[in-house]
Length: 350
Image (cartoon, rainbow, N blue to C red; front, side):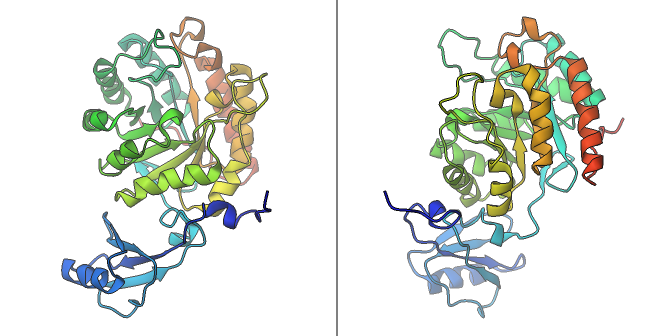
């Protein structure tokens, strides 16, 4: 086996790293087309709020409409830190993710009823969560498990948003479901099992909603960032990465939460990085210490499962915090961030 230097070719996947031509926001369609013609037939047009081209070479720096030419060091060109050295801020409704203050997204793993979801939403909001998470569609290992309330679950999440003011993040599982889920959700989640579902990644890239991209349970960091590249290449630069644990030989926990990935991803990419210690461990008692460790490692926030009665949960009760435990975690997180000289998670405005 050949030795691969860490942090260089390890992320190139054997493909050529290209250049990215970024057009000025005011560039005309004619100017963008002229740049594309100069770049040649191998250039790829990237839609979005600012037009971009990905090409093998670029002698276009002085052409009208061109803002800059960037040469990323890795195969994930658009997600590369060189594209936005200061980092990207993703807006989930009114909530800024990656803007300096840690953001906590919390709620039940699965939407079970209106009463359960409203209780959870009210509790996490009171404790300081800024975004409500909840699954209307649940991918399950067993075909006999509860797989969510589907559109009714989306309606319940929308009602909880109206009652609490919390924007909603929820999972979408197929390209065909993207328009429906985007109608209700403020942020579209791509779950671990769908991280390399390329048609789905392209669909959420065109949906006009921010995307929360979970790392696959067997995915390398490089593969995770290339999955994000699919979303960005479809025209959506509002992507949040989420480390949620990977499968290793260890069986004492559900997965192994890879906190190495937090500072590494933040070094390699301009995208915000969250951590899901609930799925990362599968054990509620381990969620608070690993949540705090994630913040200390530099995570931009957390994704935490909270259920009003974990013992009665239809999905993942063993890893869900009850409202009291979540409130304690949030208080501890505030003290930790203060000690680190960072803003504490802010409570949603009344």
